[in-house]
Amino acid sequence: MQHVGQQVRLGGWVHRRRDLGGIVFIDLRDRAGIVQIAIGPTAPEDVRRVAGGLTSETVVEVAGQVTARPANMKNPELATGDVEVQATLLSVVGPAVTPAIPVARGKGDELPAEELRLKHRHLDLRRPEMQANLILSHRLLQRARRALSDLEFLEIETPILTKPTPEGARDYLVPSRVHPGEFYALPQSPQIYKQLLMVAGFDRYFQIARCFRDEDLRNDRQPEFTQIDLEASFVGMDDVLGYVEAVLVALWDEGGHRIARPFPRIAWRDALEHYGTDKPDLRYDLSIADWTAHVKPLGVPFFQAALRDGARVRGLAVKGGGALSRKDADELAETAKQLGGAGLAWVKRQGEQISGSVGKHFTPDALAALGVGDGDAALMTVGPDRVTSPVLDRVRLGVIQRLRTQPKRAHAFTWVVDFPLFEPDPETGKPVFAHHPFTSPHPDDLARLDSDPFSCRALHYDAVYNGNELGSGSIRITDAAVQRRVFAHLGLSPEEADARFGFLLTGLQAGAPPHGGFAIGFDRVVMLLAGAGSLRDVIAFPKTTAARALFEGAPAPANPADLATLHIEVKR
Ligand code: ASP
Image: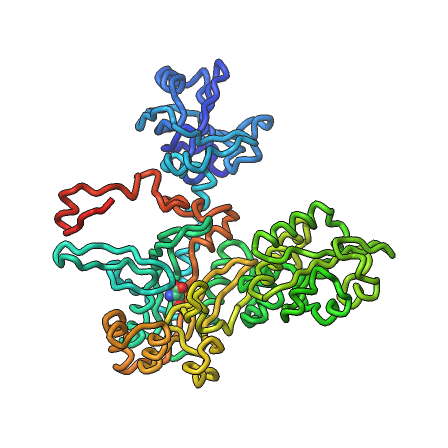
């Protein structure tokens, strides 16, 4: 309203046009929002002529006076809904063909299919929701830069054409034209470079780093993505967690939320024991319990064979779980089976009545011992932990969703610490690194590195928020001899270790300060703070789940002459 009476010049896109006979209204859109342009009977003749022919998404320039709308014409849903601009000049500066997908949507109109949106991304990005997401992304980036700069971190760029940096994915390779048969790798992360920056004495580094990982894409991954990557010297885990908390608190503040720190910590083993996952959603208190000792004496046939093999019965005592229907229980049991589990046994108590698939084996007292009272339910399964953990994780989230459980807290940040250093490769059983091979073994476990590698913990930590992994990091190995031992466990000969990581080993021998760092998955943070449903909604030009860029059409076959210059022959 403070602009009423002013003469303004505006440029933007025709969002909508309404022709009411004597008067034409145009909703003019730019990145700041929408303003109504009115072209009434007293407007100049040429303005009325141009307005009469305007089609959606045409770019126009307008000049005119801001006036207050009559009381009955105000639009409370628009930031500019109290005013309009009476156009005195109107010209088309960017004619537009009929848009392939609509930009303006009426209430309740569905979005076009995502494939179409990605194919016509220039139009999709015009939608006010997408503009808001990318504007938020910009603000968060600036805020992260400021927070880290205030902590005296230096922003330093590292190369995109590099040597492989293992983070557990495949590399994207780039052929060298001048060195036939040789390849650069695109960085899976700036990991080795940031460690070398510590060796070089920069002390605190950060980078808004683009990373590339060629993995089989899941719904919430992108082959290229952005991390807020940081590293610091002369620090221990507490220092690094403190820096990352400062950045996350600043980012959430930018998103309009006040977050308390320090964040609680949970050991990896406890996270799996109580929540079945290393990404627990701690907005809800529901947790998994070991019921083996209680259930064994009851002689329930469903559990007997597995119990004889030494498996544990683990379950969830669900408050108010009496409200779960038979159908709910069957569907949860089906999920359990799909994950390779024995299925799900369940018991419900309503007053003195006990029902459910194994209900006849339980008395009210037996249920009370599990923490299951009147109106509650017990859901349980049996088997090796590696199967029951993911099953109970899914069942826990499924129950929360079905019962529409109110979260105890809106923002549940937690650190997961004490990860194992190695995991068994699911196929060969051999050790593979749980994080990346530069992560320091826990000093208390170092003596067992050779004799019992799987029992070694790592100085590795993850940040988890409402069940989402926001990022991970570690204190690094700074002793070249220990680094060589870890490489050996991963099956690398000393020669291979030198060929692949010689530049790091050389650095570590040259006087390496203790150091550690972290990387925050920036796109995921934006997605969560924007309340967007997918990473693709916060990245301007994302790839599909099949790693294709639909708008620009990549990847695409290369022309034979280019391949020849690169000394490459494609086998089909
Ligand atoms: N390089 C790690 C990653 O990209 C982060 C870190 O360890 O600092 O996941």
